[in-house]
Length: 338
Figure: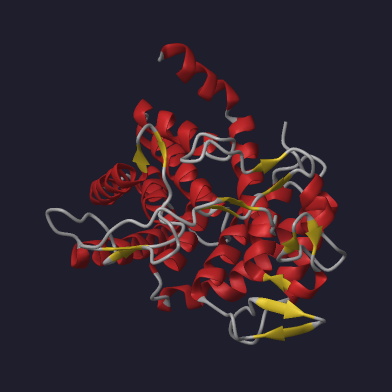
């Protein structure tokens, strides 16, 4: 059963707070576009999520600036200091999913934000921002003619493919010269695009890059996330810590997207391992889920876990739990056939 207690505690009338001190929400940490975009996706998937969806969607709406979105708010003041294309991409993904909502008010505000902000995405340089937007176009109900939608999907897919072709070689099948955070979104978006337009080149790059990523992450029979202490540069070593929960969600969703796209059961098995990382199938055999609060610890560290339970980590766990709960029959069938 999905546990929403800490999400509810972290949510004010303004939106979802960014950080907590241990399990206590920290109002001084402010609010971010990133977190409220993820929170909106959670609310859209809750049967009782209407009021929360309205809260998070309103935060996104208020965060819009004249030509973009602001990523950080504290004490009612928006700051551009932490703005990023990636945060805008996440907001667009959330809004895209909101266009499918059965709540008319939520659907309308999300469509309004999509129409206003989608044009700037074609100037993105960040691969993740491109991928978030591409995934949103494949999953939403964007108010454009089907031919134009397919053109936009093809355009963004080709942007990622071109990045891949400029960086990969015989031993490196990736879009950049390094692997950092939320890597799974890149192949995930390509698998989603292939499911939409059937382009075989898109499938090949998605398939090759995800297999490359999985070969790095799944070592010793469980998920070993690339640590954020230096990340992993081509030709370098793979840091083991700190492992961040958002990255477990990223690879879970990439593998589930690949399974949905081409039906390879290996992807389903790897998705289950990624999900199990949260509850102790990891290098320390420690659960990141706090059963006392419903929160998720912020990272797996060299010494154990970071006991703070911020929005990003908690939302990543909830998003995985929600998806796994909705796909329980598929996951159970996999166990029975293995």
